[in-house]
Image (tube, rainbow, N blue to C red):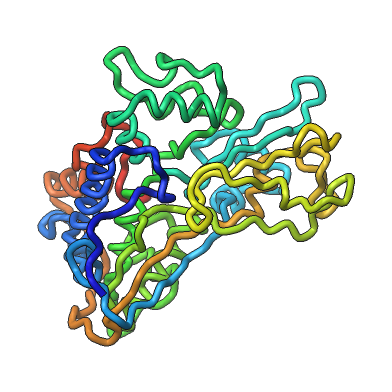
Length: 382
């Protein structure tokens, strides 16, 4: 198999013109190359290079290639494990987009009279794409907001006085006024790429090869151990690396909706509850936006649907049944000669070195394709 000519946009979306598509491919390629290089070894120890991670545009994918899909639950596990009841965790997850840290965020629309849920928007689109689109075609950004969020959105709502796109704007910063793309600080494509690359490092500590999700993430520190996503992604990628394979993220690089399970759901009229789960952006194989909404002519709303006998009162109840996925490609099984690391990631203790290392660990993307530096450009999950 050959290299690919360029990286495609997430979801194979058609928003970008030719110039934008080239810029996007360059951004993904640069992000992959930086992830392969890893942090400066004089500042962060035992975390570079990541020789088993490769760039699809520069290195051939061999004939023995296999695609591996990793899936996880969209509901934020950190909220779940620190809550005392379902009601409490649902309320907390619906209260702020900043706690929705599993690469899926949502916003709930309610009937003003009854308070019942009428619609829930779900997105897994990374902010980097929207920053680039805003530079390339601001009018397109406005059009998409007006189509998917509200016809009342105005240019000034999305762009600052200098014309810079504001990812956290009034239509995309809450769980009640719309969700156009991801804004939680760790929900970025840069973080996805960095996590996958860091997870390709095989660790052999005191003669024992690390194989469990938790041992690996605690040692390699590529994410948050209490999430659904980070340990599972890292464990799956590392399992391929331990087979001495080379690994890349599948094109188009992105986070995608995997499925909505509706076992135990019931509607007032007996209709299929999954029929109200509608893809709005991304192609069929790479969906990045869904809306859960019952048509008005059905005579009932989302809030009248039950899950295991409990009416849907929170968007988080739906998130319990959503899975998110990413896909990787592995090839050249048994051929890698990269030796395992025999120590965990370490940061030097000297004050100057520690400060510099901290900047590497939580570094902002330096590729120049963001509209402006902001928390969502973080490249390592925290």
